[in-house]
Image (cartoon, rainbow, N blue to C red; front, side, top):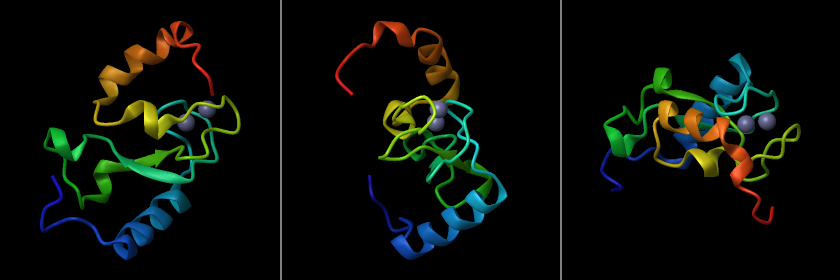
Length: 97
Ligand SMILES: [Zn+2]
Ligand SMILES: [Zn+2]
């Protein structure tokens, strides 16, 4: 999956910093304090890897300080329309945090 146009970590950090400066409201749960960015349309689904317009704030490995979700984990390679559906039925997921 990793191709020649894989972002270097430097490029990723630059892009992440720019996006989080503009907004830190998570695309998954809608709370602030995102510390990561993720592709809105996953690269695996044909989304542009390097297009800042395809990147949005999301809660990373530490999860959301407000609702506790691991938003980036939850999203994975799914489209937002698919995860939004999951979000409304999040009750069924009562696994260990
Ligand atoms: Zn979130
Ligand atoms: Zn949240």
